[in-house]
Image (cartoon, rainbow, N blue to C red):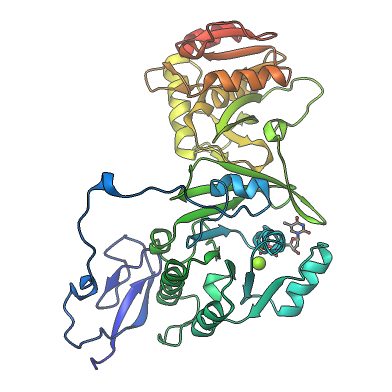
Length: 453
Ligand code: TYD
Ligand code: MG
């Protein structure tokens, strides 16, 4: 057998270096290399193509029979929505989120529902069996059919999966597992990667759907190497502020569904409850309009969502004014302020600018630009925007207002919720009037300022 060799593995990207360095040569991250024993490669007659020995014949794509992907609905409609309809047999889902955000709760609820229909197994490496049982009791779940295994050794878990033959298994969490084949500590890149890869292989072989819980690092990415995201079929992220009672699940990657779907849950003492109609959730219900707020219609997957954007612009007392954005892209804020200065002659160089999307929601689409700018203008002038105003639209560097996708749906939702004016890109203006909604179409930033006096 080949001698085990020491290598240095980057904890960020999984890149391998032969000697220790301060900076990873693969991803450029600092202080991320960790000493790891490299697994000896099986020597016997192996060449780099030996894993292809039993190669499948080449076929015409059109000859391959396509069947509808069967799915197992979890019984939690909002969770199914992000999964693309339910769990696909043999698929592996990775679900990440801050500690305490509700990952274990959600998956225990899902397993309790699933256990009514199919055999399930909950593998806990973080909490004891008693703690999980206590949680099930507290949440009033019917967990009589849920099988539980408190274990962190990969080989034991693999054996249990093969013996128990569950159709759905939850691993809570992937960072606690360790494989006896590696000497590295649990939670290290090589362990996490190896355990995830082994479990994925097992899922593909046996058809069990595996949901792995993963921890996130300070900056919100999944701990462990990026490689993990490539191994699994679906990556979901839990979002939400700790003090807010809403939780969002967003698909980041999904081989079996759309990636921009959003599941919305409300936290209760009986666990997470799906919110079927979340469009008005992220509005902060002021009695009258206040300066520095602007409501936008964003489109998350198949549903429009109305979100209030808030801005606070205040005189800066330091040479470098602060720019801070929560729930919105920070780099984009700087760009929008430059566009505002150039194309609308509104200067903010001596002002601190803070923007926030209400309710802990994160907005990734550029159609929020117009709402951000209007909230900033409103705060700067200390003057509320017109009552019942809704906006959306991207702002370009040349001061042009670009259309957003699915404008009609956003407008209809706004009208339904009682908004009366829509300041929107000209290309999104509806051909037929929408009842109760006055349309202010704009194609350039200076036109916007004519409407907002
Ligand atoms: P938990 O599921 O343990 O979070 P994670 O696995 O992501 O670390 O949830 C954290 C705590 O919040 C736990 O004590 C239970 C509580 N909780 C509720 O009471 N109701 C809920 O709806 C949720 C999601 C959590
Ligand atoms: Mg947990």
